[in-house]
Image (cartoon, rainbow, N blue to C red; front, side):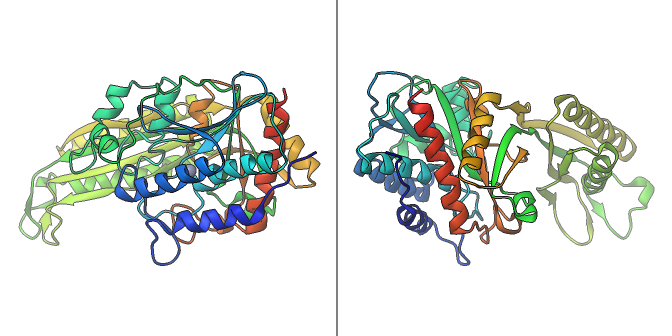
Length: 408
Ligand SMILES: [Zn+2]
């Protein structure tokens, strides 16, 4: 028999998890490895155990719940993350993890034991809002960085990933990546406006944009805003502002799906009548084409060098994250589309504009993603919303595809 999905459990669990770190207005703040993250983890682990999953915690704090199959084969894994940004919504990441639990519940209720085991995972620090790089847990899982490098990452207060993992009790014993899946699927809200705008239900995700995050620290000279002639200024803030304008102009010139954002900018001393002597700002560049992404990086760097020379300020660049674009497994992407269409759901093939754990898992095994609409495209925002019916539709696609793969 075909396992049937429990709508109520998915929606109730999303509500219950959203109560931890709840923000007024509907969102959540569960930054990675904080007390709120620990409480969220504890709750999801308790649900995994209730469903009879064998829960394993690895040395970077990734949590995997395993459901045995008829044969001792590589599992079909699904998962995402439950950490959020400081002004996070309730669906980003959480939806994929909790829908994975509903796949297990449906199989349990139907008394189905699949040929391959089923695994549901949540990965540590996907957001990168507190510790960089983002997608840290899945990156370690896929062997992209070593444990010691990840442990050494520190937040703004100098607190390290290793210390926080130990403090919240999630520095586990198993080796990240030891359990290599046969295939990996991630169900996620789109976090962009395309599906909502086009009234399409299921995004069949073919690729993930490459991401370049660079933090620039500019050192100039502070001086009086009234007495210092313009030609004698060494204004760190001027460079930062210029780069923001240049980046916008660059996206227009390059076209395609090149995007650029100066999302963080801090000036010192940050006073109305003082020329800033220091500016720290970030540039986030993304493209689905690696050559174009490299071109954008090179053009921003050249522009910064030019303005720094004319303004006579010093610039230091620090790479916070750099990931090449990822192409998902074509065969698996086809199966996502097939199962959505079999349920009479409208589909659209698309790249992912945001980074996801799935892009790391593609290094290990065939991987694909399923998107559902985000109302008005809002995400990383307390007003992030996906209609219950859409959440359920996406989860049903995941369930049907996992059942098929688990018999393969
Ligand atoms: Zn996410």
